[in-house]
Image 1 (cartoon, one colour):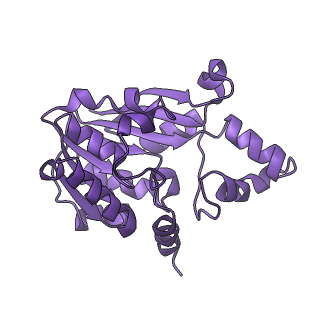
Image 2: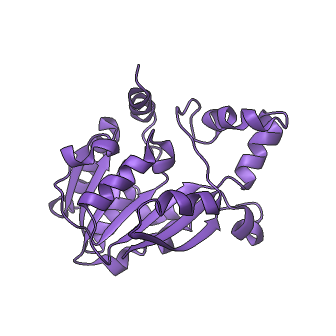
Image 3: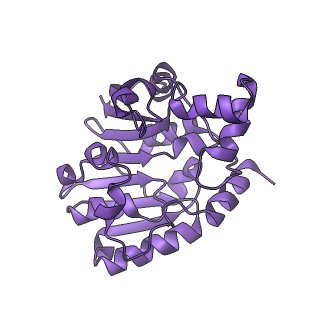
Length: 242
């Protein structure tokens, strides 16, 4: 079984966002993750073209469309996209949206090459076998000068990794990766879970010379919000193409 097939099987079994009923008001969903909406800023993209990489069951993609963006959204999981399509129809936004099933590392097979105003990916690239390949395709085919990328990656120096080290790895750092595969997501057994320091995240993204990281913030530390800037589980990364 290839690595990408393992990833596909995992997300087919556990589609991201499937815990929310199709009819759930998305504002209710946001109360549990208040950092997402300000990072997305969907109200800024009215009339613009947005590409979402790893849309899951469509929660963020639908928010962009609700605020007037034209959205192309890609996911590896057919089951997640079935839910996303149903949500789009129930929200009467399907005419503004296109959903595509496929591997991000072969993106040109599923999404017509053209520049987008915003490329958005929340918590996805750290689950892909070759994130560098995804960034390469974006650079060649989907951006132009001024395109904005908003990317969330898991933070290496976070409370979540410390918890995995203490509770599940017996302080053996080399076991943390396996512990995160079992405990980072809502369901165990995620095939790929990477974490990045701020420096590593910047290096990954700026491997494409035109991609300039404008800001990186650590967020999400529910128990101690005052420390989320240091030890938050999410790295929220703003990038501009020059």
